Length: 252
Image (tube, rainbow, N blue to C red; front, side, top):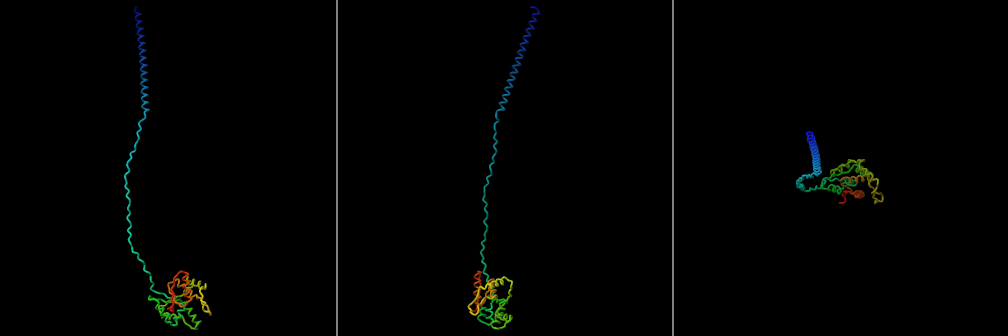
């Protein structure tokens, strides 16, 4: 073999080896790339697997603190101290002074010095006695004495006589008072008439009606011997549901 042929053969061999090395190199590189891809795929799969695994659920248990045991103590209210007070019943008020009011009939007996009437009045009560009447009664009595017996008496004469038998006082009549107004109504009604006298029937006078209303309204005792006045007074008191006191010295 010539020298030229040897070099050609050597070059060819070297090319062949280089080609083989190149092929091997490419195979190795491709293998490396394939391994790298496989390795990458494995890594990705591992990551996916890790991410897909559910995290353990940690249930947060809230700490329950036991409530303090509060013992309910029933409040004991002290019972009120009730002081037993003995009931004191008021004693009945007994009026120490007795007020006696006269009508015309009693004044007539006193002016005649009738001892039964005078002593009956003076002994009526152990308490203090005050004798009363009002000016209209005295004036009516003076007028009746004049008309019936033609006897003239003065107001002062009658006052003097009445003062002799006890603590006497007279009052004026107020024509505008409620007592007088009620007396006028009673007088005009003519509810009470005594017709036992065939010559003349007897009616209550306006003054009698004032006495009735005064007796019903005030705590006084009527002193009279007039039957019609006594009957009318009791009937009016019954109808008005009140109590009245009447004293007739001649019935003793």
